[in-house]
Every structure is written in structure tokens, then in C-alpha cells.
Length: 314
Image (spheres, helix red, strand yellow):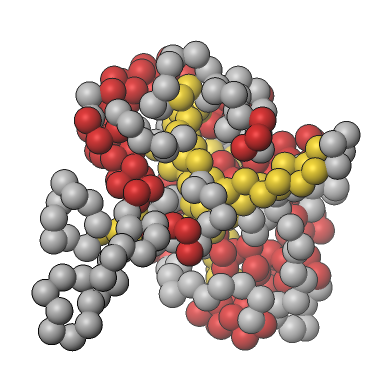
């Protein structure tokens, strides 16, 4: 995907790129920024200098995060920095603003885990010759729908991220855009609630809004088409990424999620394609490996979630 380089004026290209990444992903560590923006540099000193220019200009702020005996800074844009990025007009505007309280709050680990998931896809795309860049996923985009199981309610499905990935095949000379809904689970919610998210994705998959009929008509007009078709050329595949615990516990959690999904009548005949894996597997083995346990299919690992539709066999 093309990477826009314009942003806050008066800054170097790396600082501008960092500002865009911080605007889109809200809270990102120095190490994550290094791997996203300057992976070709062995050391991160140059990036750190560029980040400090953002802070000195009042465009970014930091808090410290101690992990494994080392301190890593977490960066976010100030109101001034967000306004500067928005003025360039290159990224979709996001109303969310980070604050010191939010950066240190309970959602810190989840936000960083979502970035880490996108980062794993970026790094493996580089290795595999595919395309996925630092701005190719967008966090918490609302998708409005209605569910027959909850009549009369206006609902919103909000994935942790919507990620775009271009699968390239040099031999076949093909390029295929794959879109994913990403749900990152750090074992903070119950399995029942996680299973309910599967139900929500299945409901959104088939949700077809009806157009209001003429004034005074007793019935609405005939249904239009599924709501998702106005946003995506094909319905995104769902990636459920587990983290925040030992791999053995996460494997049990995946099995429990499959069991609950199997007992949900609404999921018995859905066309939803959903795979479960762990962040460690995604980082170590990559999305093209057999690391995905189908949430709604037989228990064999499924490596088809990263293939173009014509190549899908699972």
C-alpha cells in the first residue's frame, strides 16, 4: 500500500511518518515504531532523535513502560499533533484523543497488543514478498447492524482492527487484496463474551438494511443488499488472536471458544470465515503457516486464511 509522507510541516520524513502512525494507532512504543518505520536501521537512535523532535515541538508526549527489566517509552500525539496530521488530509480523521490518563490506564496493554498484532502482519509481509504497511490497519471502526436475536436494537460491531493485506504471487503475477477483522483477546473477558462476538460478526455478515417506504406506506420497500457490501468487495475474514497468558492456557481457551460456538444455532450455517491463533504463533511462524484453528470448522489447523479466495480449500 502507498505510504503517505506528508504530515506536520518542518519535520523530517521519519518524524512525519511517526506522527501518522501515532495518529492512526493512538499509543505505540518506541520499539514498535522502530520495527514499523525504520526496520532497515540496526539501532533505533535515529528514530529516537526524530521522536524527540516531535515532543520538543509539542506534537507528541510519552509515558514510561517497564517490561523485562527495561524501560520502553510509549508515544502518543497531543491535540496539537493530531490537528497537524489532520491538516494534511491524508488519513481518515479519528475523533479519539489519547491522554496521559488513558496512556497509563487499563486499556494500555490491549492497545499495544493490537499494534503488535498488526506489526506481526507487517513483518511477515516483508518476508513473504506481500504488502502490508504501518497504516494498513485501522483500530476500532464501527459497523452498525441489527440482530434478529435482539429486535429493535441498533447495534455496533467494533473490531479491534480492520486490516488490509495484499497477497502477491510473483509466479502467477497476481495481487489480491485481503481484508480482515481482527479481534485481540488478552484473556480479560469471559469465553461467553468472546463467543458472543462471533455471533455478532455472523449477524453483521447477513444484515440487510431495509429502505423506508413512501410516506404513509404500511410496509418498507424491498430489502436492499447486505450492509457490508458498501464497504468491502468481499466480506472480511475474522482473525481472533489470543495473548496475555501461557500458550497452553490459550490453547485451552481456543478449544473452549470452539465448543461454545458449536452450541450457538446462529453459527451453524454461517458463511463467516474465522480463525483462532495466538500472538506468539503469529509472530514466530507467520500467517501463512498452519497456525489458525477454525472457529467454526473441523479442528484441523487451517492455513487458508491468508490465501486469495480462489486458493481457499479449508
